[in-house]
Every structure is written in C-alpha cells, then in structure tokens.
Image 1 (cartoon, rainbow, N blue to C red):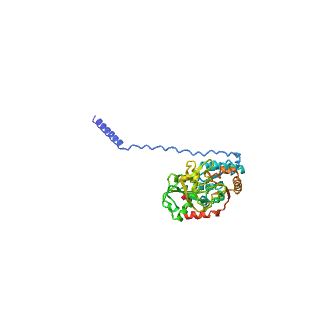
Image 2: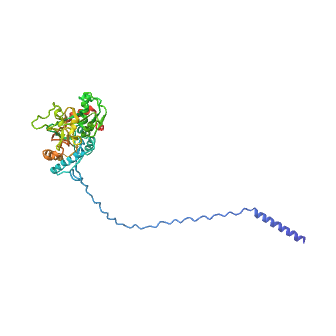
Image 3: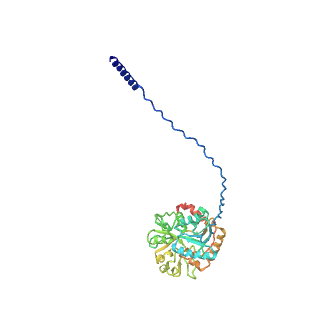
Length: 380
C-alpha cells in the first residue's frame, strides 16, 4: 500500500512538471500566407485591318467681300459744316447742296454738323478717304498740319475773297475805341473760329489790349446775344460789308464798317433780311434779327481787324482724285443755280455768293497767326 502511494506521488509530480514546462514554452506564431501574384497575360494580338482613308472634301474658297464703293448708299461721302450759325439752318441748307451734288454726280452724300470747330477737324482727320468739310481758315491750317487736309476752294462773298472780324459793343456802353477794351470781358464764338477768336486775339496783342474775363458763346449769333444781354462787354464775330441800294457806291475797306449813322433808327427785319432804308446788314447781327429786331439800334460795330482769307472747302488727305474732280465741278455748277441761295449762299447760312480755286499758300498768313498765338488743336 505504501508502495502504491509512493507511485501516485511520483506520477503527480511528473504531471505537475509537465504542466509547468508547457506553460513556459512560447506560443507558435502564425506565418501569413503570401498573396498570389497576378499572372502576366500577354496582350491579345489584334490583326491590323486596312482602313481606307475617308474622302474629305477640299474647303471651298470664299472670295473676299468687296467693300462698298465710296459714294454709295452703304458708304456715303461725308460733308461736314462747322457750327458757326444755327445748326438747323446748316442742316436744311446742307441737304439742298447734297441733293444737287448727288444729281450731278450720281454719288450719295451725308451732311452733318459736328459739335465744335475742333470736332470738325478731328472728324475729317479720322476719315481720311471719304470726307469733305467747309471749314474756316484757322481750322484748315490746323487740319492741314494735323493730317494733311487739302484746300480746294474758298468762298467769295459779294466779290470779296476775304472777310474781317468785327468788334461789337452796346451803343450805350460808353466804349469808343478798341483801346478801351483793355481789361473788359470778351465773348467769342469758339476757339477754333478764325474771325471770332484767332484774328482778334492776335490783333489785340498787337494793340497791347488784354481782355479780362472770357466767354465762349458757341457761335456768332450767340456772341451778338451775349453783348446785347450784357453777358460780356464786347464780342468778336465775322464781318461782311453791308449791301447798298442801287446807285450807291459799294462799301470800301476805308469806309466806316457800320450802317450810316442817320439810317440806324430805320433798321428793321423783313422776310428777306435786316434792312436800313435799302442798306442790307450782312454781318453777324443779322442772324439774330428775329429775336432782336432792334439789334442794330442796340449793338454797334466798334472796329475791324485786317483782312482774313475766306473760308475753305477742303478734302480729307486720301480722298480719291477722280471723285474729287467730279465734286469740284458739281459745286462750281451748283453755285450758278438759284438753289445755291437756299443753301450755303443764304445769308443765314454762310453767305457764300460763289467759290473760286484756292491754294494752300494763301493761308500762310493764318499759319503765322496760329504760331504767334501759340494755338494747337489741343487748345481748342
């Protein structure tokens, strides 16, 4: 029995040792199975198939579009007039001229009145191939200098190829001489006006007369009104000699510029113009006769400048020579018709009684004035 108990203890001890040994043995680590690599499959060979080229039609060549001919409805010839008098009068009279020129040449014309003298110069230079303009001497000189505008003709007014600036004041102003204007307020039409601004500016410098405050009125009639209404002490506008009754000797440069003193109280407008016992007033005062019928009684001519070359008909620098020749011939013919008086020949328009050929050299006097005054287009 003792032997059996002893064996049991031995077996128990061995079992305990086995258990302890198992506990001290590290656990086996599971090794991950590597993922299978993708099998490389060779690309499937695609047999080359002969594809016939597609027939692509050649592009159709479109001929270039011809620009509309100058003088057509699509491309009329521009006719510009400076706004020296009432724009409505210019437009209506300009249309009469355009119609006459169109009938004579078969060309189409488009009349316009730019907002200022400078705008007229800018527009003719901006349209070098298709524009004609009726511009005064200073405007022509600046346009010629700027872009090569070329003079063709000049105005004739009652036999004169020149005109003048008149200095006007109220008759009750007490101003008796041009020297009295020193320091007084001055109304002028536009800085681009030859007779309204350039000529009197140079003339006053020569007299050592320096005006005070200046008023840019916008046109010759507006200057007359500015003086009449006391908005300026004196004004400068164009002067054309008065017409005289039949049998009376015509005005001469050595004569007084105003209507004879003993006729002033007789001056009054009628359907044809402003008359003083058969003498017809043709200076800028006549343009306000409807709103101011007593204008001659209220406003007098104080004096004149030296003579100024008349206004021009000028062509843009690249105007076609053949069309220019047609237009020049048509204008000369138009000047001989009664319709001329309804157009630029009207005294309410520019008062051109005719035209004659002009040369650029005739305007050298104006170039000298422009240089002396130091005026450029930017100043306008």
